[in-house]
Image (cartoon, rainbow, N blue to C red; front, side, top):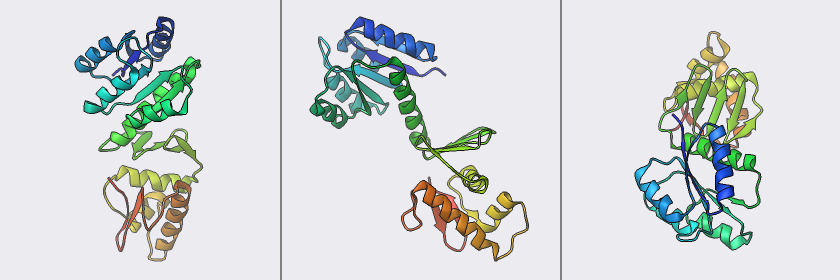
Length: 232
């Protein structure tokens, strides 16, 4: 399904250029040169992300952002020629997710659009999104084909064992995986009580790389006497 991007800019050449680049990336674009028309679109279309110019001839971008946040949670990127720090703070305070200052490279804007859509998709997912080779949950993306792990879009350098542990925990998202079950899945060997230390050490290294902690876990929670789980 194509994501729907709202683009609002009274400079037609900029709006047209942004529309062209977005369409080339496969997005469906709703483009407007005024805030009034954009507000009507928001109420009739299911928008996935908005790119809003601050300076518009009728309703300014800040006001549109405020209206959006009254009813919707989709990402908003503010687009403006202003460079004052107060304008950036104002936009972010009103609920904008990102801020791009003119002049800008279209490819930079496209990259920010994709990043915001990924972030929204990852953090709003109730259950992990899974294919045979890709697993996504809690801001984590695991790719079995490339053996890459991204946490909040930052690449983590994981060993094969650490990657496998995280994959098994992700597959069982919201459920406890026993130390015994984790060892069998990852190492493929019979489990002995001494092997609990092996699992524990790898979990500790994994937490360090994820900047997680056993005391106040954001990702991997220890269920004492049972095993580990990724919290919902």
